[in-house]
Length: 91
Length: 91
DNA sequence: CAAATACATCGAAACATTTCAATATATCAA
DNA sequence: TTGATATATTGAAATGTTTCGATGTATTTG
Figure (spheres, each protein chain N blue to C red):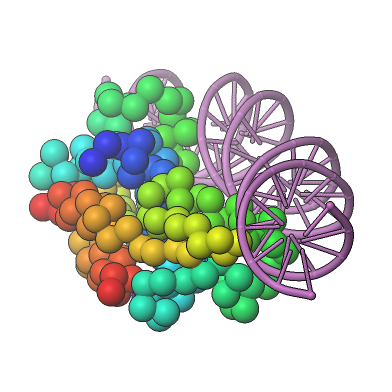
């Protein structure tokens, strides 16, 4: 995995709100609706939108439109690649 | 692993210079001297010092003084804990 | 179609990070 | 002990991130 990609994913993972979103995604069995995020993150709507965008830009989540709503899924493949990279750092 | 800790490690990993330091640490068989960093990172000495501090504060590297010199080693245990956390995000 | 709902984008304020020159500290060498 | 070397700290400029109010854009519902 390229340094740029590692950097972007790490940056996406370096904020408590975004970590929480990923954790809740896991709790919800890998399918979270945008409006559900407001239930566990106390931020204004544009801020939540911003955080979701960071995760999407890092390819950590896949965004699916469902009419007015937006649904998120974890991108396991990217997470696996990131973990693989981290493992190559070990001796 | 706590969200705070994940945040701090991710932040440490979210800079190209710091990623490079960890990669070179691996190349050097897990034992890098401070002055060697200047060979592959084109930044002023205080900047390198700053980056190394971020890695140390995140516990990603262990710092050992050797007289005038400083030696770094990867903290594999923390990296493992971080990887374990990332794996819990998967379904 | 009009109003309501869900989400995104813009612009600006507040805050954090990165970078370097200058300076400090600690150790080694003569 | 004096000078040289290795690294850390300080302070400030430049840049990036986070946050929100205001507003824009789809989509659904009445």
